[in-house]
Image: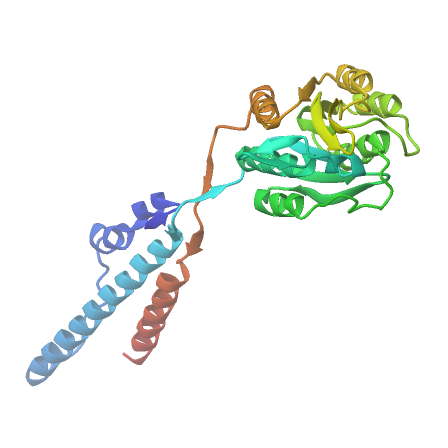
Length: 327
């Protein structure tokens, strides 16, 4: 559709008509000392021709004026509305990819899967719901690695998460929770203080890295980074070996005390995910604790059209000037 940015310029349209018909015309005729009767007919014919030419030039000039006024109103062509990303939270996910995430103590669609596969499924659905948030992804084992910087492109983050595998950062099965928090602080500290969120998911304890997790949590608290920690892993599972079936606790290495302290220091919460249902429920709770922006922002592309009437106005004005000069 066509939109006029400055429509009040249309009030100037009748200005030439007011000047022409509102003001008295000054006669250019002067009294002649000697009148020749037989030349009067020729003078009448010439006067009629000049009047017709001047009338035509006037209306052409008036058309040029209308086009000039139309250009001054700044006509624009508005395209279809395009939904824009709403600036919400800067949300970083830190996912443990150490060797212990290979334990198959989760069930998805009646199939037993490892912990990382379960995280991929549930976290991908969570990321897809975070419309308006900038999402980033950190993978950590012995060393943390920024897999995806903060971005509105949720599909890319989901794809990079699904491409992760055990040992993608290193072959050592250790876990560096403190370093992962430190990396998140580094990437989020320059962003708005009221929107920094880290969701840290691990199944073990801090066994590597240069930074103690609680010291990293204190640093995060100084930069107002809220951390939600998730301890993943079943409480028990049946293992069959040469001696038969026996029950074991696959989460015996999970340091819940430290994860709870990290969350408490930063104003977040600690969650325990023993199966896929609990993990999905945790991410729905996170949606409630950190709700997405509900307002939608739209952008309509604008194309300027003023140069079309302006070009025609200049063309007609040139014709009027040249014609007046020749008459």
